[in-house]
Structures are given as structure tokens and as C-alpha cells.
Image 1 (cartoon, helix red, strand yellow):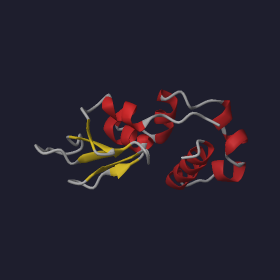
Image 2 (spheres, one colour):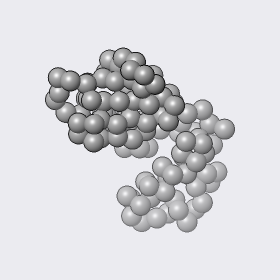
Image 3 (cartoon, rainbow, N blue to C red):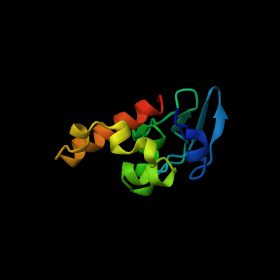
Image 4 (tube, rainbow, N blue to C red):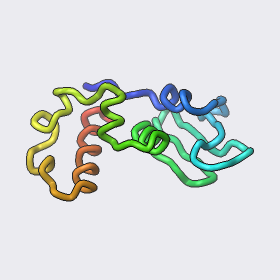
Length: 117
């Protein structure tokens, strides 16, 4: 199994989070606000801003905050290796999809499945 990145650790590099019950809360980095509306659930490994409705997992957070592609996020996290290369994880018919958006969705799904997310 591939080790998944920890969402709280990753998000804490960009915003201050404080514990509120079972979640952590902070100011949303995606819009201006004075009252924290950005919640991170460490059990589910997801985030959600109740102000702008931006949400997702650690991959989508890093994509949005850095303005980079999913593939670049994998590279930064050190997850782009032989175990995730097309011949090992993604059947060739999926890897060769012509539509780049469809290909990225398929690759994301395969990576998340490999990481048991």
C-alpha cells in the first residue's frame, strides 16, 4: 500500500488551524474572510469551506492553493514512482485517453484507489 499524505499536516503549512470538536478550523485561503469558515476533518481526510463551498482532499487542496496539476502534486509529494506509473496502475487504454480532462479523472481515481482513500 502507498502511504497517503496527511491532510492536516499539508494544510497547516498554508493556514493556521485550531481544534474545534473533532474538526480543525481556520481562515479560508481561497477567499477573504474575518470569521473562520474553513474546516478540516482529519478522520475523513477532507476539507470544506462553508463560506465559498470549496472542498476536497489533500490533492485538490494542493492543486488549488499552488495552482498546479494533479500530476505535479504527486511529484511534489514524492508519489510519482514506478508503483504509480501507467504500466503498473493504469491500464494502457485508460492512459491513452485523448481527452486530457478525462485522463486526469481516471488517473486520480486510480491513484486514490491505490492509496485506499
